[in-house]
Image (tube, rainbow, N blue to C red):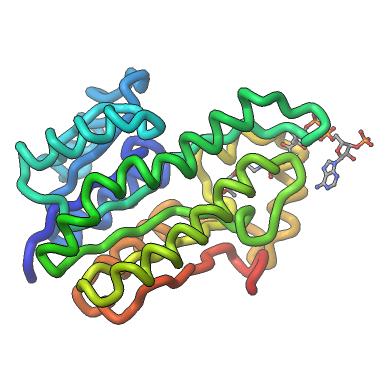
Length: 247
Ligand code: CAA
């Protein structure tokens, strides 16, 4: 197979880690983009090495800041060459009922979870189109598909991710660049474990499979969408949620 350069945002979180590992296992060169305030980079790299992943390249920056995204992609290109695969995975929650939600919680979630797609994708999509090959995978959420009380900000951003995906897929379909979304349900990551235990129990009870997703069950779909043989799949949203919701 052709080795591609894959840049993953939010790479050092639960989902990002699984995505990096699956893409590396599929033979790609992985660039792990992480937030500069994340202070466990060295520990993460050591953990990756211990698991047999020795050559992840790291680039630091805030995906909600356009200049940071320009810098991260420039660093990735300098280290590895052109970016062929972009996984827009970085995301945050600021859950509050809408009545209590403040503007800063709204702005932060929209900037990190949605504006980041403009900031990152802008750096690579035209070059992918020029080369006639590219894969862009955007991580949405079941809560962007169905809406979730306590998450007007997050649900709006993650629904926006799906709209962005469909529109850009249409623009790039004739250029060899596919753009798809994955809408994970509740995955066993720090983000989900931050939900109050009694609320989380109710959520797990409502999942037909009665469990959280393993991060690698989402990473696998990423790897699938980046495969050569996924070249006819574009504009799609893959729901991976244990039967919690489907359209
Ligand atoms: N639907 C409708 N109303 C609800 C509700 C629901 N699911 N859950 C709670 N409410 C109501 C309550 O009945 C209560 O109403 P009253 O004030 O009239 O009694 C009101 O909302 C406040 O409820 P809480 O006591 O829960 O309020 P809180 O301030 O303590 O907590 C919250 C609010 C932080 C949003 C909490 O409800 C929560 O964590 N909910 C879960 C949100 C969620 O699913 N987040 C997913 C995070 S992980 C993720 O996002 C990853 C992914 O992609 C899936």
